[in-house]
Image (cartoon, rainbow over all chains, first blue to last red; front, side):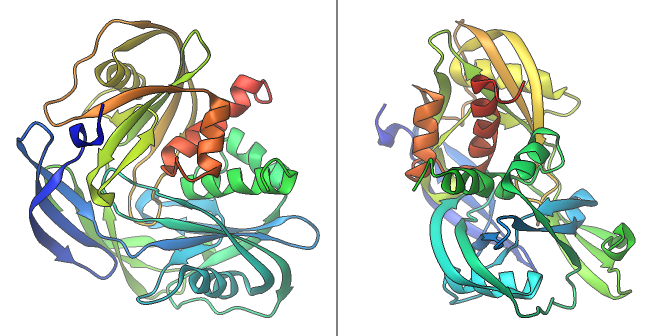
Length: 184
Length: 184
């Protein structure tokens, strides 16, 4: 099957609203069969997530309340890219703001798309080590607890349903493969 | 840190719009410090994703155009839960509609949350084997190509950036660990 048999093209685009956090659009598209269909989607600036490995080899995680699910989640440090910001700078900023750590060594390892059905969000995945604690500074509206966990224990937490956040699980694939040396 | 230091409580809730695909809400919440903050979020019915293993041991994947990113993605079969539907029935329905396959053996293996910052979507992960081709039936607005790939090749596709969809990568963690016998 050729790509042309799959591709939809924009016919019109309308902004449904531009909120404090979310920007939502409704587009009309032409499908491969020539029909018109509606696509509603979130226009997102993108984000960065950090695999931050301490000198004791454990990773930094956060316990954070996530309002849409009304629950606390265990997550890797992450945050939205500010306007004009490079994703690496987002990663450095969020790691320090949220955990108080700075890292000497940074590497971009991959990209994920968390919600391709209704959002254009991409999340850039960074691996950081050589950490030192310098103190943080959370936003007024952010409340979280920093915890340490080994990659092995994090994989077991996935198996046992204690880690269910897909960006964290996706980044942990990279963490497990890179730290084990299976991927270089 | 106790959970009470993290939890936000709803003060008011307003529906911003109820579209063809998306339902978006804006709530005011009380943060742990007592301040009022705004939370905009997508109210989602949930979804199911299927790790479908053929008798040749390969998995079924789809190439599908995803409008928000204006790109074709390689994904595992998945779809939204219809109103009142059990997630297992969603998984069976979507596998047959999208790939034409039925499976004799089904197992629920886990749950993921793809977008905890701004959606309450959960995705139930199913493992299916004992597949037989019976023919499918896509929705009028769905266009996709079914492909087969081994778990090993799928992990390499993650490493090389050819698979970036987080629900697919998350489900592939389960696929790799279950098929290798590392998880039972």
